[in-house]
Amino acid sequence: MASDSDFTIGIEEEYLLVDRDSLALAEAPAELMDACKSELKDQVSPEFLNCQIEIGTKVCKNVAEARDDLKRLRSCVSENAAKFNLAPIAASCHPFSDWRDQHHTDKERYNDLSHDLAGVVRRMLICGMHIHVGIASPDRRIDIINQLSYFLPHTLALSCSSPYWQGRDTGLDSYRLTVFDNLPRTGLPPRMESFSEFERSVDVLIQLGVIEDSSKIWWDLRPSSKFPTIESRICDVQPRLEHTLTLAALTQAITRMLHRLATRNQRWRIYDAFLVAENRWRAQRYGIREGLIDFGRSEIVPTAELFEEILDLIEEDAQFFESVKEVEGARDILRLGTSSTRQRRTYEEAVQAGDDHEHALQAVVRHLIEEFHADL
Image (cartoon, rainbow, N blue to C red; front, side, top):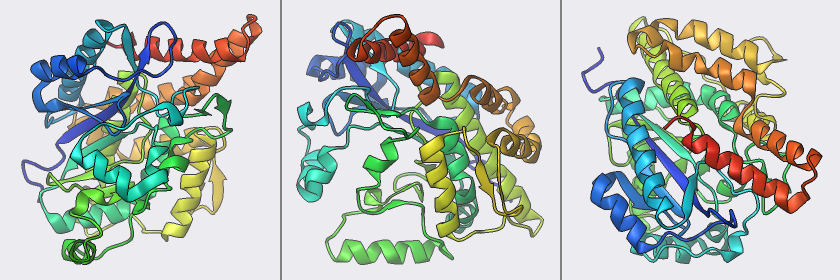
């Protein structure tokens, strides 16, 4: 049976701050963080790099609640940033700024990270979004994680927002993951039989002094170290608020669908991580453009077709959460393209209008600023 705390959601987003004139990355003044904290309290915090800022919603029953809170959070960051001639963008990589020019936040946690992870973490000029879904039972969290991992490439494909890195088109739709995967304890979660098995594995590393707690486990999907939730960390951050809500609604509804199967003594087939990782790579490389592998059918299937099947699977769950509109927003992304597609389109339009490479990339940043504010 599901408890009252099951299937609640929370969303965390990381933003980059850019100078409104140069459109390059800019460090957040202490006064900016103070102003945001005075209004948002612990719902806002600095991130690893000084040019980043992180927000987190309250615990929400559904995406309607999340929309109101996320709009408030985004608006607060934007309004306070404007006072310093800055603007937030919600893209997983900045189109042209160089990681070598950035400095990490002077905070004990981040100082320790810089020391422990050395050159790997210094390249972490990336932003993601995390979606928490409440599951009261620890063992049920593990069971859901084992099954939900199959769908991680699907949500990644919809979310791609990082085609550019240091002024170059990488050819990937989510370059962010190539940077993040250089950290230890990342990637798809291993299959586990119980929460106690997860705890035993983590305790080995804690007792060795390798990590201090499970917050240093950075899998694509993990039991949260702070809350009774599963935490999906696979997605690129979204320039548009409504697309964030679509990804959150999909994750919430798929989680409930898997729980429904369990109540009927059924479950989603668990495929080897080796196979799921191939879909993860396809999503990272192509986004929604080239399809994903349907392992049951043993063929590569267009992404739009796969999502029509997923929407049918979770129809009952979307109705339960009154999130049908948000879930069906996946069709909007499939029609208009992911952020990576839209960024490349903006670049090409700027070049065709006569801009050189540098100014075309600046046009991409202006586009990202506009998209951030479009739904506020």
